[in-house]
Length: 184
Image (cartoon, rainbow, N blue to C red; front, top):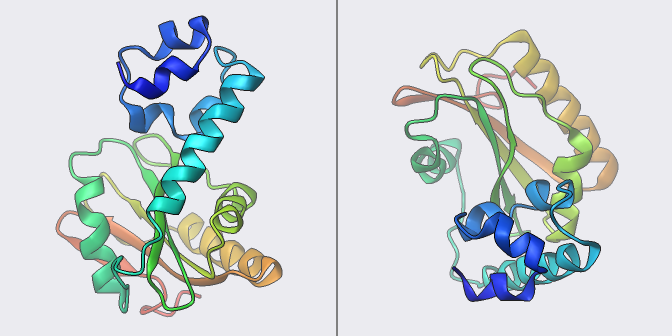
């Protein structure tokens, strides 16, 4: 059991004792989970923010192209049987501040909430965001829904002041950049 778990209530400790720390610190996981008290959630947010601050060093990788974003994200998608939607949050120099799986879907769909994505971007003071999701079928061809979500994310980014750089769809050893293919 991680030392961090000792900060939690007994009920929360029992609930997370066999879980990986990465799972427990996922904000979407603990914020809507009744096994955590309000105080547990405050403590987990503090730990999460501390980790975010630690991960914002200047030597973090810079993303200069869709291929670099694909190469960076590809290991996160290996073996996925469900669609996952990840975000890379960047500073003004396109250096990675934080990456996170923000949504998990089914075998062929993933519902994306712009409000949730951009609240995470603003929380880590990101200037820009690149999103990516997997197509477990192996075919990275964007669906109509992928294109519509991308356009909506770009619009919301303009409203909140976070530049939407790209949406990358990963398939079997290939990817499509919706920006490079002029879908938005």
